[in-house]
Image (cartoon, one colour):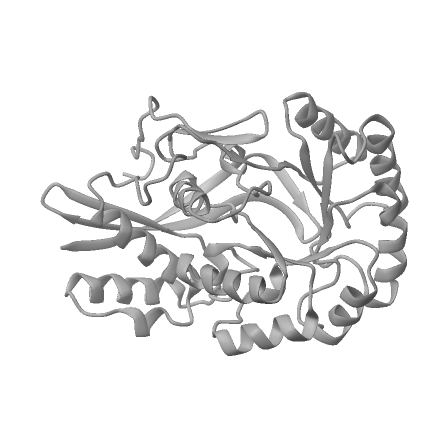
Length: 345
Protein backbone atom coordinates (compact mmCIF):
# COMPACT_ATOMS: atom_id res chain seq x y z
CA UNK A 1 0.00 0.00 0.00
CA UNK A 2 1.23 3.49 -0.89
CA UNK A 3 0.57 6.20 1.68
CA UNK A 4 1.30 9.90 1.26
CA UNK A 5 0.02 13.24 2.42
CA UNK A 6 -0.78 16.49 0.63
CA UNK A 7 -1.14 19.99 2.01
CA UNK A 8 -4.05 21.99 0.62
CA UNK A 9 -5.05 25.61 1.28
CA UNK A 10 -8.76 26.47 1.26
CA UNK A 11 -9.61 30.06 0.31
CA UNK A 12 -12.64 31.73 1.87
CA UNK A 13 -15.11 33.32 -0.53
CA UNK A 14 -15.03 36.37 1.73
CA UNK A 15 -13.10 37.16 4.90
CA UNK A 16 -14.92 35.46 7.79
CA UNK A 17 -14.83 37.08 11.21
CA UNK A 18 -14.70 35.51 14.65
CA UNK A 19 -13.79 36.97 18.03
CA UNK A 20 -10.27 35.58 17.39
CA UNK A 21 -9.83 37.51 14.17
CA UNK A 22 -10.64 37.34 10.47
CA UNK A 23 -10.11 34.13 8.49
CA UNK A 24 -9.09 34.35 4.85
CA UNK A 25 -7.48 30.95 4.33
CA UNK A 26 -7.56 27.57 6.05
CA UNK A 27 -4.87 24.99 5.41
CA UNK A 28 -5.64 21.31 5.65
CA UNK A 29 -3.85 18.02 4.94
CA UNK A 30 -5.02 14.91 3.09
CA UNK A 31 -3.76 11.40 3.73
CA UNK A 32 -4.06 9.25 0.60
CA UNK A 33 -3.78 5.47 0.51
CA UNK A 34 -3.65 3.46 -2.71
CA UNK A 35 -3.06 -0.11 -3.80
CA UNK A 36 -4.06 -1.26 -7.26
CA UNK A 37 -7.50 0.18 -7.97
CA UNK A 38 -8.29 0.69 -4.30
CA UNK A 39 -8.04 4.22 -2.94
CA UNK A 40 -8.65 5.86 0.39
CA UNK A 41 -8.53 9.48 1.53
CA UNK A 42 -8.71 11.11 4.93
CA UNK A 43 -8.44 14.70 6.06
CA UNK A 44 -6.31 16.02 8.90
CA UNK A 45 -8.25 19.19 9.62
CA UNK A 46 -5.55 21.12 11.45
CA UNK A 47 -6.92 24.43 12.72
CA UNK A 48 -4.10 26.92 13.31
CA UNK A 49 -4.33 28.62 16.66
CA UNK A 50 -6.96 26.19 17.96
CA UNK A 51 -5.84 22.59 17.38
CA UNK A 52 -3.76 21.13 20.18
CA UNK A 53 -1.46 19.67 17.51
CA UNK A 54 -0.70 23.04 15.92
CA UNK A 55 3.03 22.59 16.51
CA UNK A 56 6.09 23.40 14.35
CA UNK A 57 6.84 19.73 13.62
CA UNK A 58 3.29 18.81 12.56
CA UNK A 59 4.18 17.99 8.94
CA UNK A 60 7.26 16.06 10.01
CA UNK A 61 5.08 13.95 12.31
CA UNK A 62 2.49 13.44 9.59
CA UNK A 63 5.21 12.26 7.21
CA UNK A 64 6.39 9.74 9.83
CA UNK A 65 2.85 8.46 10.27
CA UNK A 66 2.43 7.98 6.52
CA UNK A 67 5.73 6.15 6.10
CA UNK A 68 4.93 3.91 9.07
CA UNK A 69 1.50 3.04 7.68
CA UNK A 70 3.08 2.33 4.30
CA UNK A 71 5.33 -0.27 5.93
CA UNK A 72 2.27 -1.95 7.42
CA UNK A 73 3.26 -1.04 10.98
CA UNK A 74 0.90 0.29 13.68
CA UNK A 75 1.36 4.07 13.60
CA UNK A 76 -0.97 4.91 16.50
CA UNK A 77 1.86 5.68 18.99
CA UNK A 78 2.95 8.44 16.61
CA UNK A 79 -0.36 10.30 16.63
CA UNK A 80 -1.64 9.82 20.18
CA UNK A 81 -1.07 13.54 20.84
CA UNK A 82 -2.07 14.65 17.33
CA UNK A 83 -5.90 14.60 17.18
CA UNK A 84 -6.19 15.88 13.63
CA UNK A 85 -3.77 13.20 12.36
CA UNK A 86 -5.67 10.57 14.31
CA UNK A 87 -8.84 11.78 12.61
CA UNK A 88 -7.21 11.70 9.18
CA UNK A 89 -5.87 8.17 9.63
CA UNK A 90 -9.20 6.88 10.93
CA UNK A 91 -10.98 8.44 7.96
CA UNK A 92 -8.45 7.24 5.40
CA UNK A 93 -8.55 3.65 6.66
CA UNK A 94 -12.35 3.58 6.51
CA UNK A 95 -12.24 5.09 3.04
CA UNK A 96 -9.63 2.58 1.83
CA UNK A 97 -11.61 -0.36 3.22
CA UNK A 98 -14.79 0.71 1.42
CA UNK A 99 -15.72 -0.26 -2.12
CA UNK A 100 -16.63 3.42 -2.59
CA UNK A 101 -13.92 5.71 -1.22
CA UNK A 102 -16.49 8.29 -0.14
CA UNK A 103 -19.03 5.97 1.48
CA UNK A 104 -17.56 5.51 4.95
CA UNK A 105 -20.83 4.58 6.64
CA UNK A 106 -23.98 3.08 5.18
CA UNK A 107 -26.77 5.42 6.23
CA UNK A 108 -29.93 6.87 4.70
CA UNK A 109 -27.97 10.15 4.51
CA UNK A 110 -25.15 8.69 2.39
CA UNK A 111 -27.75 6.95 0.22
CA UNK A 112 -29.32 10.33 -0.45
CA UNK A 113 -32.68 9.55 1.15
CA UNK A 114 -32.48 11.37 4.49
CA UNK A 115 -30.97 14.84 5.02
CA UNK A 116 -29.34 16.13 8.21
CA UNK A 117 -30.85 19.18 9.89
CA UNK A 118 -28.22 21.93 10.25
CA UNK A 119 -27.95 25.44 11.64
CA UNK A 120 -27.26 28.42 9.42
CA UNK A 121 -23.93 30.01 10.35
CA UNK A 122 -23.67 33.80 10.55
CA UNK A 123 -20.17 35.25 10.55
CA UNK A 124 -19.04 38.40 12.28
CA UNK A 125 -18.82 41.63 10.36
CA UNK A 126 -20.64 44.91 10.54
CA UNK A 127 -24.08 44.79 12.11
CA UNK A 128 -25.61 45.41 8.68
CA UNK A 129 -23.63 42.51 7.22
CA UNK A 130 -24.70 40.19 10.03
CA UNK A 131 -28.33 41.31 9.72
CA UNK A 132 -28.26 40.56 6.01
CA UNK A 133 -26.83 37.08 6.60
CA UNK A 134 -29.42 36.29 9.27
CA UNK A 135 -32.49 37.21 7.28
CA UNK A 136 -31.07 35.67 4.11
CA UNK A 137 -30.61 32.39 6.00
CA UNK A 138 -34.12 32.51 7.45
CA UNK A 139 -35.65 33.30 4.06
CA UNK A 140 -33.63 30.40 2.62
CA UNK A 141 -35.40 28.00 4.97
CA UNK A 142 -33.12 27.81 8.02
CA UNK A 143 -35.06 27.66 11.30
CA UNK A 144 -31.90 27.37 13.45
CA UNK A 145 -29.37 30.22 13.24
CA UNK A 146 -25.98 30.42 14.89
CA UNK A 147 -24.39 33.85 15.35
CA UNK A 148 -20.78 34.60 16.15
CA UNK A 149 -20.76 37.35 18.78
CA UNK A 150 -18.23 39.07 21.02
CA UNK A 151 -16.13 41.18 18.66
CA UNK A 152 -18.55 44.06 18.14
CA UNK A 153 -20.27 46.42 20.55
CA UNK A 154 -22.27 44.19 22.89
CA UNK A 155 -25.29 46.50 22.99
CA UNK A 156 -25.40 46.57 19.19
CA UNK A 157 -25.31 42.76 19.12
CA UNK A 158 -28.18 42.67 21.61
CA UNK A 159 -30.16 45.09 19.47
CA UNK A 160 -29.68 42.76 16.52
CA UNK A 161 -30.96 39.82 18.56
CA UNK A 162 -33.94 41.92 19.65
CA UNK A 163 -34.66 42.71 16.01
CA UNK A 164 -34.71 39.02 15.13
CA UNK A 165 -37.02 38.22 18.03
CA UNK A 166 -39.35 41.03 17.06
CA UNK A 167 -39.88 39.31 13.72
CA UNK A 168 -39.50 35.64 14.70
CA UNK A 169 -40.46 33.90 17.94
CA UNK A 170 -38.29 31.28 19.61
CA UNK A 171 -40.76 28.67 18.34
CA UNK A 172 -40.24 29.85 14.76
CA UNK A 173 -36.45 30.38 14.77
CA UNK A 174 -33.95 28.82 17.16
CA UNK A 175 -31.03 31.11 17.98
CA UNK A 176 -27.61 29.93 19.07
CA UNK A 177 -24.75 32.31 19.80
CA UNK A 178 -21.04 31.58 19.96
CA UNK A 179 -18.82 33.94 21.92
CA UNK A 180 -15.57 32.00 21.29
CA UNK A 181 -14.41 32.99 24.79
CA UNK A 182 -14.96 36.73 24.25
CA UNK A 183 -16.42 37.55 27.70
CA UNK A 184 -14.32 38.20 30.77
CA UNK A 185 -15.29 35.96 33.71
CA UNK A 186 -16.24 38.92 35.90
CA UNK A 187 -18.68 40.29 33.29
CA UNK A 188 -19.96 37.02 31.79
CA UNK A 189 -22.96 36.39 34.06
CA UNK A 190 -24.25 39.93 33.63
CA UNK A 191 -24.00 39.60 29.86
CA UNK A 192 -25.72 36.20 29.91
CA UNK A 193 -28.56 37.71 31.94
CA UNK A 194 -29.02 40.39 29.30
CA UNK A 195 -28.87 37.84 26.48
CA UNK A 196 -31.46 35.64 28.20
CA UNK A 197 -34.29 37.99 27.23
CA UNK A 198 -33.89 36.96 23.59
CA UNK A 199 -34.94 33.35 24.01
CA UNK A 200 -31.61 31.81 23.04
CA UNK A 201 -31.17 28.06 22.71
CA UNK A 202 -27.59 28.22 24.02
CA UNK A 203 -24.33 30.13 24.11
CA UNK A 204 -21.04 28.48 23.17
CA UNK A 205 -17.90 29.05 25.18
CA UNK A 206 -18.75 32.41 26.81
CA UNK A 207 -15.32 32.63 28.47
CA UNK A 208 -11.89 31.46 27.35
CA UNK A 209 -11.25 27.75 27.82
CA UNK A 210 -9.06 26.60 30.69
CA UNK A 211 -10.76 28.62 33.43
CA UNK A 212 -12.45 25.57 34.91
CA UNK A 213 -13.58 27.07 38.21
CA UNK A 214 -14.99 30.16 36.52
CA UNK A 215 -16.80 28.04 33.92
CA UNK A 216 -18.16 25.75 36.62
CA UNK A 217 -19.60 28.73 38.49
CA UNK A 218 -21.03 30.19 35.29
CA UNK A 219 -22.72 26.92 34.27
CA UNK A 220 -24.29 26.67 37.73
CA UNK A 221 -25.71 30.20 37.61
CA UNK A 222 -26.40 30.80 33.93
CA UNK A 223 -29.89 31.77 32.71
CA UNK A 224 -28.93 30.40 29.25
CA UNK A 225 -27.73 26.84 28.57
CA UNK A 226 -23.96 26.85 28.06
CA UNK A 227 -22.25 24.68 25.46
CA UNK A 228 -18.51 24.07 25.73
CA UNK A 229 -16.32 23.16 22.78
CA UNK A 230 -12.82 24.68 23.01
CA UNK A 231 -12.84 23.43 26.62
CA UNK A 232 -12.71 19.85 25.29
CA UNK A 233 -9.65 20.35 23.08
CA UNK A 234 -6.52 18.65 24.33
CA UNK A 235 -8.33 16.51 26.92
CA UNK A 236 -7.35 13.22 25.37
CA UNK A 237 -8.07 10.44 27.86
CA UNK A 238 -11.42 9.38 29.28
CA UNK A 239 -10.40 9.81 32.91
CA UNK A 240 -9.59 13.48 32.35
CA UNK A 241 -12.67 13.90 30.15
CA UNK A 242 -14.96 12.53 32.85
CA UNK A 243 -13.31 14.72 35.47
CA UNK A 244 -13.78 17.82 33.30
CA UNK A 245 -17.48 17.15 32.75
CA UNK A 246 -18.01 16.37 36.44
CA UNK A 247 -16.29 19.60 37.42
CA UNK A 248 -17.88 22.03 34.93
CA UNK A 249 -21.29 20.33 34.52
CA UNK A 250 -22.17 22.16 31.30
CA UNK A 251 -25.61 21.97 29.75
CA UNK A 252 -24.14 20.92 26.37
CA UNK A 253 -20.89 19.84 24.76
CA UNK A 254 -20.07 20.42 21.10
CA UNK A 255 -18.13 17.76 19.25
CA UNK A 256 -15.61 18.69 16.57
CA UNK A 257 -14.04 15.36 15.56
CA UNK A 258 -11.01 16.94 13.86
CA UNK A 259 -10.09 18.71 17.11
CA UNK A 260 -10.93 15.81 19.44
CA UNK A 261 -9.16 12.93 17.71
CA UNK A 262 -11.70 11.44 15.32
CA UNK A 263 -14.93 9.52 15.54
CA UNK A 264 -14.01 6.97 18.19
CA UNK A 265 -12.74 9.76 20.44
CA UNK A 266 -15.92 11.75 19.87
CA UNK A 267 -18.01 8.68 20.71
CA UNK A 268 -16.19 8.48 24.04
CA UNK A 269 -17.28 12.06 24.77
CA UNK A 270 -20.87 11.22 23.81
CA UNK A 271 -20.99 8.27 26.22
CA UNK A 272 -19.60 10.38 29.06
CA UNK A 273 -22.01 13.23 28.34
CA UNK A 274 -25.10 11.03 28.11
CA UNK A 275 -24.21 9.31 31.38
CA UNK A 276 -24.36 12.77 32.97
CA UNK A 277 -27.50 13.99 31.17
CA UNK A 278 -25.44 16.52 29.21
CA UNK A 279 -26.74 17.32 25.74
CA UNK A 280 -24.52 17.42 22.67
CA UNK A 281 -24.32 18.15 18.99
CA UNK A 282 -21.71 17.84 16.28
CA UNK A 283 -20.03 20.49 14.15
CA UNK A 284 -17.41 20.62 11.45
CA UNK A 285 -14.29 22.70 11.96
CA UNK A 286 -13.80 24.23 8.51
CA UNK A 287 -12.69 21.02 6.85
CA UNK A 288 -12.93 20.59 3.09
CA UNK A 289 -15.82 18.58 1.71
CA UNK A 290 -13.72 15.43 2.16
CA UNK A 291 -13.72 15.81 5.93
CA UNK A 292 -17.22 17.26 6.05
CA UNK A 293 -18.55 14.23 4.16
CA UNK A 294 -17.03 11.81 6.65
CA UNK A 295 -18.27 13.82 9.64
CA UNK A 296 -21.77 14.05 8.17
CA UNK A 297 -21.94 10.30 7.50
CA UNK A 298 -20.74 9.56 11.02
CA UNK A 299 -23.24 12.07 12.41
CA UNK A 300 -26.02 10.23 10.57
CA UNK A 301 -25.07 7.13 12.57
CA UNK A 302 -25.73 8.91 15.89
CA UNK A 303 -29.07 9.06 17.66
CA UNK A 304 -29.74 12.77 17.37
CA UNK A 305 -32.34 14.98 15.73
CA UNK A 306 -30.97 18.33 16.94
CA UNK A 307 -29.69 20.68 14.20
CA UNK A 308 -25.98 20.03 13.66
CA UNK A 309 -23.22 22.46 12.69
CA UNK A 310 -22.36 20.97 9.30
CA UNK A 311 -23.09 23.80 6.89
CA UNK A 312 -19.55 25.08 6.22
CA UNK A 313 -18.87 23.41 2.87
CA UNK A 314 -19.94 26.43 0.84
CA UNK A 315 -17.50 28.85 2.46
CA UNK A 316 -14.58 28.24 0.11
CA UNK A 317 -13.83 29.17 -3.50
CA UNK A 318 -11.74 26.05 -4.12
CA UNK A 319 -13.48 23.33 -2.11
CA UNK A 320 -13.56 19.78 -3.43
CA UNK A 321 -16.52 19.23 -5.75
CA UNK A 322 -18.80 16.80 -3.95
CA UNK A 323 -22.42 15.61 -3.60
CA UNK A 324 -22.84 17.60 -0.38
CA UNK A 325 -25.47 20.32 -0.74
CA UNK A 326 -26.67 22.64 2.04
CA UNK A 327 -30.18 23.83 1.27
CA UNK A 328 -33.23 25.04 3.22
CA UNK A 329 -31.79 24.17 6.63
CA UNK A 330 -30.55 20.69 5.80
CA UNK A 331 -27.44 19.00 4.43
CA UNK A 332 -28.16 16.64 1.53
CA UNK A 333 -26.08 14.01 -0.23
CA UNK A 334 -26.97 14.41 -3.90
CA UNK A 335 -25.52 11.22 -5.38
CA UNK A 336 -26.08 12.50 -8.93
CA UNK A 337 -23.17 14.93 -8.28
CA UNK A 338 -19.83 13.15 -8.59
CA UNK A 339 -16.72 13.70 -6.52
CA UNK A 340 -13.89 15.53 -8.27
CA UNK A 341 -10.45 15.60 -6.65
CA UNK A 342 -8.66 17.46 -9.43
CA UNK A 343 -8.11 20.42 -7.12
CA UNK A 344 -5.70 18.43 -4.96
CA UNK A 345 -4.03 16.35 -7.66
